[in-house]
Image (tube, rainbow, N blue to C red; front, side, top):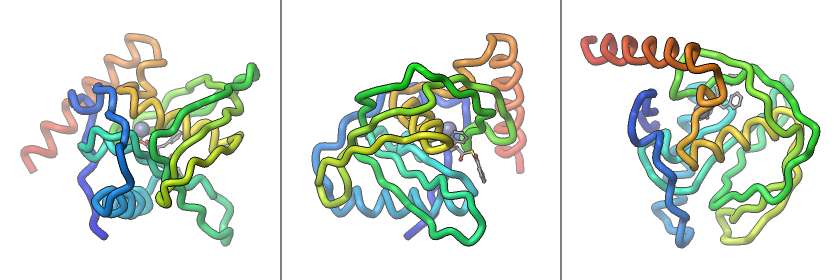
Length: 173
Ligand code: K1U
Ligand code: ZN
C-alpha cells in the first residue's frame, strides 16, 4: 500500500466527469487500498479517485466516528444514487482537496445508493446521517463538482484565492 498525493483545488482534473470502471482489476484493488490508506492518513472520512488524479468512478469512505468502534472501510465502484429523501440536512462540509476551508451544504438527509464492490457484486444500501452527506460529497467529486460549488459566488471566490496562495506557497517550499 502507498500514500497518494491529493490534488488541491483549483485543478482541472477535479472538474472532469470521471469514467465508469469497466472491470475490477488488480490495479483497481491496489488503487482502492492506496486511497483508503491516504484517506485514513489525511485524516478524512472519504476520498474519490479524481482527488488522487485518477479519472475513474471509484470512491472510498469510512464515517465511523465513535471512539473504540470498529472501522468500516467501504469501497464503492460505479456508485449511483437511486433515491433521495425529500427531507434535507445541512452539514458544515470540508474537503481534502480544499484544506482548512468549511461551508454549510444542504443535501438530501437520506439516499439509496447502488454500487459494485471489490468482488464484482452489485450492492445496495440506504445511507443516513454523516454517511449520506459523505457519499453525496464523494459522488459529486466523480461528477466534477466540489462542495464550494454550493456556496455563494463571493465565498467560493475567496476560498479559491486562498487555495491558489496555498499552492504557490507549497510549490516554493
Ligand atoms: O472528499 C473529501 O475531500 C473528504 C472529506 C469528506 C467529507 C467531509 C465532510 C462532509 C462530507 C464529506 C473529508 O474527509 S474532510 C475531513 C473530515 O471531514 C474529517 C477529518 C477527520 C475527522 C473527521 C472528519
Ligand atoms: Zn472533497
